[in-house]
Image (cartoon, rainbow, N blue to C red; front, side, top):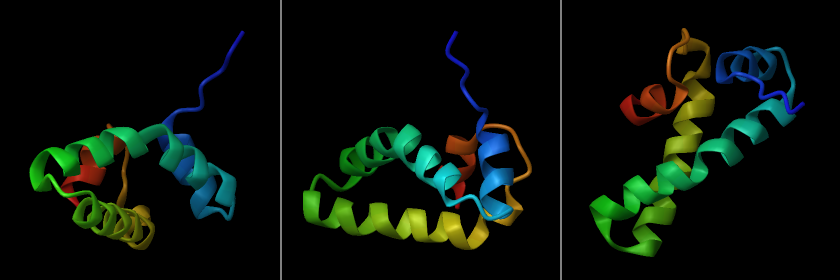
Length: 77
């Protein structure tokens, strides 16, 4: 049976030093994040820049994530 680790657990693991957990979060949510950005800016180069900035902010602010929907939190930062 496939076990899917919850985002909250991945965040906790990443904060404790497990970089693989952040990679899982990134891979899990990258298409939604990039798709949303593209729907707003309609330019791949600009979307790429914004996409990177979103994930840099996520790394910087990840200790502020308290649970709930990670993707919703990501869109708010």
